[in-house]
Length: 338
Image (cartoon, rainbow, N blue to C red; front, side, top):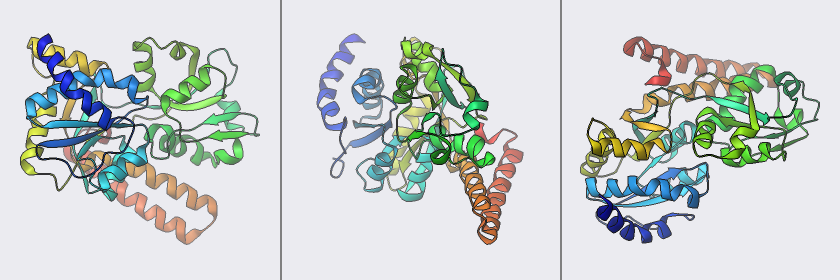
């Protein structure tokens, strides 16, 4: 086992240089797939954690796997749209954009190491501060807020949909300063070190930070938590070779499954990301985030005072909500667990 990993690591050295920190270029070589990975941390921090998994992917599929790490959600969508990546691990909102704009298709979704379905968006403040949620919602332009990427489900969409928009709060007006586009890791560090007063994050990222011994995770506290959000999806381009799709499908759906020592080792690799494995999924996995997006747009339209626009937005929301309810009735499971 050790010899195999050492040999494969040598073959992956060039892959890391090609895939980390810059956009993938050109058309994939025969027998190669370019796998984009959404990371809330810098590439050099997560590369060691992904090495064994990508090495196993190469061995099991027989494909050369070139990774492409980025914390920039839009970049991941654009890379797939211009066929510079073939598949990727996305957040739900960025995944929705990949389906809409990049010919993407959901084929699997993660479940966490505790076999739970879903996570939650949170607001965090410094542990020793006296800041409360009521104080945050009073506005007054006294506090600084750190938001996530515009295409982050937990960093932007969920707090807007479930917290700010229903109360008619525009963060740009409510807060003294709003820092946008930061990763969860960056927001955690900023709050823990007193650089900003409050920031968005999520339960999975905080748990992972604690498990990795990040001291900042013990220097913040949660003052708000959203409803359950779906786990992150795996998405490939629809035009990917069907034979390649099947190899990838088999890899992800069997990885870390079973009672063998090999499966236990694979689960230990996945546990570093608080992931227990992957389950089959399709585009219906994105229904909850579509509903959140539609709800935010309806609230914004209502607040703008445009009745025609609000009515159209409400019609869209009702249609998506009906679609979600029909799915739950058919599967007898919450949409977030699909």
